[in-house]
Length: 362
Image 1 (spheres, rainbow, N blue to C red):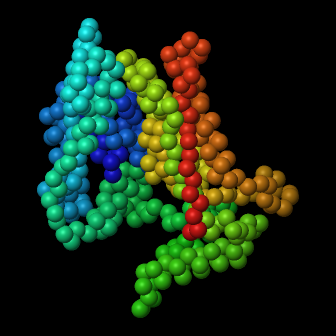
Image 2: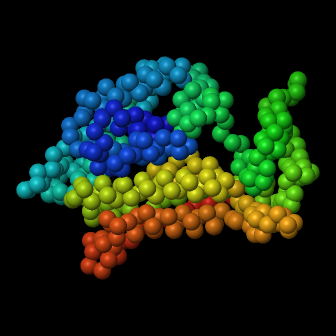
Image 3: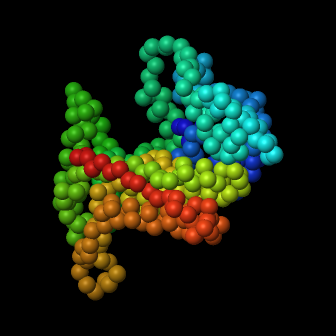
């Protein structure tokens, strides 16, 4: 939702070339149909667009209210969209920090972050309204807005895959037709009379796994313990803040760095999808996605030999690929790599990625 809000604000501002963070020369087109949020919750933009952002924000919130059927007045207070306009003279830059003291820092990103940090500390009045059905509202937004935005070519009946589907993705890769037939027959079964939604879900998941175990179309795959678990991965960049602070005096270099991060995000979405995971939010150096704990790789190259499991790919192999992509897209970027060389502006501040993984019984 927040990624959607930011993208609509950027669209409404029109000239993406004036974006400093996030930035990519074709980010609005490239972000479509990737199945994940790709925009961060902060925007640094060259120019005084305070009035325009108010108008654009009101239009976006009106659309969210119309589709979700939540009160528009409530949403106007619920979403906090703050705008600050400041000048950085090139000769003797003087700005005021959030504590009121003068600063002669000409680092645009550093100043913007400091000022935006201060606005987040301001309390905002939100009217108290009871009996809001957020689950129903989010379901409407997903079905009528977010899924269509995130997955082009899909109709409104598209559903984000369930946890058992993500954890058993190697079965889907083996025989998609059989797999989706079983999903529809078993996982999507309606509750029996007198059966609660939770009871129905629990029964359907057990029946689903048992069916995968006995279906001949999936041979030589076998249901293994790892199919009953799912990995939830959160990733964050290291030294990103230091990097941006060091290059922040030159907005063009910041744009190049932001563009490299966006290229990494696009590649990350592809790698997660190839592995069998589902990205939720991939913005800048922040990643959040669901993934199978492991996937079996079936040797099917030679039709004259029996199909067999050749090896297992684990979620850690996916993280290695993400690390490699980060190195290729960011650190070895043709327009950035000189910054990391000896004597370069970012020597000793090479960014990297850290990952937190929760492996949970599905």
